[in-house]
Every structure is written in structure tokens, then in C-alpha cells.
Amino acid sequence: MDFIVDAVINLLAHRIGVFALSLLTGGRFKGERGFAWGLALAVGSLIVLAPFAATVAWFIYHSGR
Image (spheres, rainbow, N blue to C red):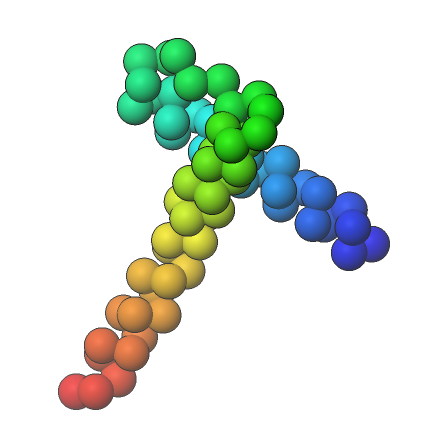
């Protein structure tokens, strides 16, 4: 079960990363192999995790008041 969830999250992060990087490069980025695949996965993971990190930071900021 963990393998299936991991594969789905990796695929989702890769697709989001490819979309974001292709927007930045004018559609030339494909992210199909090697370094490009890893770069797309890293960018997609950052985009997927950013809302959670922002929420935690917001809670920490407002808990000090």
C-alpha cells in the first residue's frame, strides 16, 4: 500500500513540476529523463508542500502573540 501511495505522490509532484517548468521555459521543458525528471520532481514537491509549510509558519507566527 505504501508503494502505491508513494508512486501516486511522485507522479503528481512530477506532473506539477513539469507543468510549472514548461510554463517558465515557454513549453520547451519536457522532464522525461535523467536530471530533468529529478528537477521536475523537486520543483513539483516544493509546490505541493508549500501550502502546508505556509500554514505551519502562520500558526507559529500567530501563536507567539
